[in-house]
Each structure stands twice: as structure tokens, then as C-alpha cells.
Image (cartoon, rainbow, N blue to C red):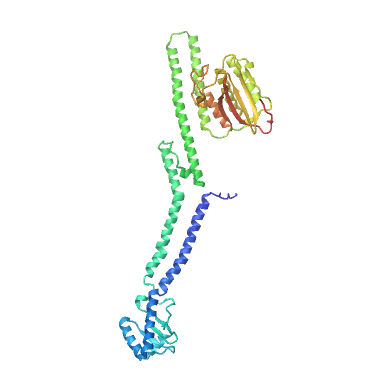
Length: 458
């Protein structure tokens, strides 16, 4: 089974970009923020370094001015300021004050730390700060004051770094996924709920249908399905209303005929005509409903239009008593189309009957054709006077009869609706236009590639 590569606008790439960006952002945050927090929690602050350097400068000035007495005076002052151990030593690690170092203090001098070093121990370390003016002359040694010990808010910053900030970025990721996935799905759910409430006119917003990914395709499919469902339901409701209206008149005539006291033979003939009319009405209505609801493509075959026309005109001449000379055809044997024979025959028969019904008794009905690329353009012309331009599309609606617009009577206004649906089911197109003397029904059908030629038939 082959795996289909996602398209350029696929939802896959949006999700991939969002997740990759989130992962890279978290990696960058972990690295940069981790280094920042390490400096905050393991190194002395600038304030602490500045204070220790100032203390070292004061000790250096006391040594330069008054030697050991000055250092002793300064140390007494420092002992009142800082509670920890404070000393001043020379380059030979000996005390520059009048009080020598004890063995324990000398031992601690081996673990002195520079103010620039990281502070890892929780206990207060001893810091060595060289004299700023002459580092080789001596150094200040001080037990780090507790207020300068880094990492006082270490737990708080760990919670912020490892909990709050990743949580906020994850929340942003969830918001992005929600807007990308859940919001359009909620719109689809709202439309489905509207259908359940019989609100078939509800459509998705353009913000959903204009998307180029799979959710946009799904939204457009939903809208198409909604439109199709609304059209089908409206057609069925209209058919039921029109059918009930059309059946009411013949049923009333049947009741009147049955209650009358006329002879049996005329009564039987009258009842037969009414029953035949109702049967034809019901059959045409059911067929129109089936053509409208059945969406599968009909099986097609090669059909010679000339042979089909000869068969249809023979039946039409017999039924209408029109001479076949008035049913003319300028389509030769090279006109082969692809379609379903029975369905195409019924469509042409409905149009032929309609043309005969609305043409004068001596009129001409003509079938012509010409090749148009991979299609055949057929047309059926009558001499019935045509219809108003505004009614050229309305005549294809079920139960549409333009009273007084064309001569003739009969029919229920279903023939052209059935014909258009039948032609469309075969991948064709049917439309009407006026010619000045009558109405032309245009049919566009796929040509049979094996048998049809490139000749143009006038």
C-alpha cells in the first residue's frame, strides 16, 4: 500500500511546524534560562562583588596609611559591621594585622574562593579579594555575609523555570491546536446540529471553507452536502405538493363520472383516460425523484444518434399522427455519443413530444448536430414560437406549464425536468434558447472516442 505524501497546504505541515517550533522554543528556553538561573543562583551578585571590592580597598588604604595599627582599627570597625570572620593577609598568607592567624584559620586559607567563582556550598565560604590598587601587596579575606549568599530564591525560580514557564508555553500550544483543529470542528458540529433541527439553509463561514487544508476540504464537502440535501428535500416537498394538486382534479372527475348516470361504455372510456393520466403522472414523478436523488454515474455505451432518432420518430409519428417528413434529422451515421441508452432515449423522447405538442400542425421539428472537441452538440428545434427569455430556465422546473405562452395543451410539466436530469446523469448538459420561430433544446454529450469522427454536421 503506497503512502500518499501530504500536499503543500496539508494540515500535516501545519501541525509539524507548530510542534517543531514548540520543541525548539522549549530547548532554547531550557538552555538560555538555565544559564541565566545558574548565574543568579551560583555566582555572586554585582552588589556583593562591589561591596567586597570596596572592603578590600578600605583595607588596602588602612594598610598603606598606618600599617598594622590601621589594619587593626579597620578590622575592629568591620567586626561591628559584619558578623563573620574578616582578616587581611599578605602575599605570604600571613596576617597583616597585629593578631597572627591560628592554625584553623591557616587551614581555611587553603579553601579561599574568588568573588568570580561559582558558589556551590550551602555553608558560608571564605572569599579572597585582592587589594584593588596593588594585588600583590595583600588581600582581604572575609567570610561571605549571609545576605550575599546566592540562591536564596532558588526553589522559587526552579518552580518558575521548570513549572510555570513550560506550563505557559504548553498552554499556548494548546491554544494553537484548539484554533487549528477544534474551532473548525465545532463549526462542523454546529452545522450538523442545525441539520438535526431541520435548518438546512445553514452554511459554514468562509473562514472555514476558504482553508486550503483537509479541514477546509471537509468544510466544503459539508456545505456541498448541505446544499444538496436542502435541494433534494425542497424538491421532494415540491413534488408532493404538486402531485397532490395534480391528482386532486382527476380524482374529482372520476368521482363525478362514477356518480353520473351516463352509459357504461363512455364511462369506461372516461375512467380509462383519467387512470392513464394519473398513472403517467405518478410514474413521471417517481422517475424524476429517482433521477434527482440517485447520484451514481449510469453505465454508458456507444449510441448512434441517427438510429436512436429513427426509432423515436417512428413511435412519435404513430402517437401524434404527425408525418415522419415533419420530423427531420440532419445527423449522419458518424454521430456516436457515450451514454445510457434507455435514459438518453427517454430524454430525447420527452423533448420530441414537447416539441410536437407546442408546434403547429404543419410545423417542422428538426434534429441537428456538430462535433465540438470531445463532445457532440445536438439541438432539437420546433416552430412553436418560443418562450419568454425569463422562462428559459423555469421550463425545466417540475410541474411548470407556461399557460398561453405556447400553443398546445397536455402534459404535467415533468418531461423537460426528467430530460435535464437524465442528460446530467450521463455527464452532459441541457439548456434552451429561442430561435425566433420556435424553441431550440441544446444537448451536449460526450463523444464516443472509437467511433465518432471529427466531421462537422450542420
